[in-house]
Length: 413
Image 1 (cartoon, rainbow, N blue to C red):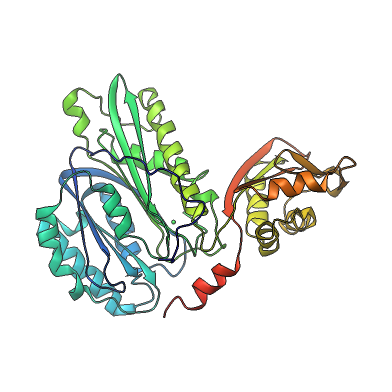
Image 2 (cartoon, rainbow, N blue to C red; image 1 turned 135 degrees about the horizontal axis):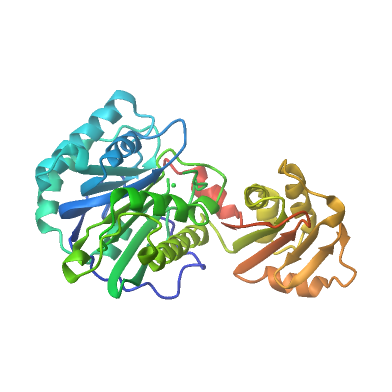
């Protein structure tokens, strides 16, 4: 972890309620970090519905391979996560470690290995010794208790400076259900599905297929629209678990993703995922400003997203924000290089409420003082109007500071 907490960290941390049917335990195995927890286990005492989205990297970690295969079964009994070592690019040894951990977890909770899900985060290319923590899982499964969400978020951190948690309560046909989520991520962040891990759980009764469809839709404007440094991790994993315990209280079972009874749940899921995704962006390694890039007037939403990502991933844009410099020329550059339809002479750019460029040139009413004031804020909105259509998208990122280089220059040390 970094020495200090990000200045963009939430002022208050959400009070995380229990999720019926799910228990949590953490342990310190000394995988890389000393004097802190680095293993987390979630246990469902009965089979729960599960959905997941994973990295599209062509060099995925061994745990990602396991999760991608097991999610096809739609049933989950345990999640085991370690920090400090990604178990990625570790060949046969990595696969053996994954298999050994899955067997140990399945024995600890008396389930099939196909109902065990694993995730690892940390250094790539270093063998992970399952012997450091697999023997802990039996005790963790017995000692796990509901409500330890904050402890779980702490255990999965690497260079994160604060635990990322969020919760929502929502009604399904008059029955109140809870949705909790945690995430980790600060560097190597450009999810393409999410170093990015996130684990969500609800007591709602939702079929695996409906859960998967809801998650796939909700992840696009949230985790798939956040970037810290444009680098997609080998380990990105986002799992959503539904224990179904609310059914005993009369809550209806949701079998189809577009069931009208689930409208509020879908909205709450999207809102919670965006909350977590923004927390990841705001904890970008060395970050001092959150940047919100909105592109409007594109030929399509997809085109708007590609242009927004071009701006958000530009080192020149990010360093300009770090220097609190309203350099709209760098935004123009990023729009132009995106490879998407754009008309230079229709381009309008604003930083916050201050319009800096209008129809392809500097705004005649531009105020350097007003623009500079916007750049000093913790949240810096950049809005680009293309004037070509109705496509719109927002991407969340952060500035690029000297601290980012320092953190990553000695990451393996």
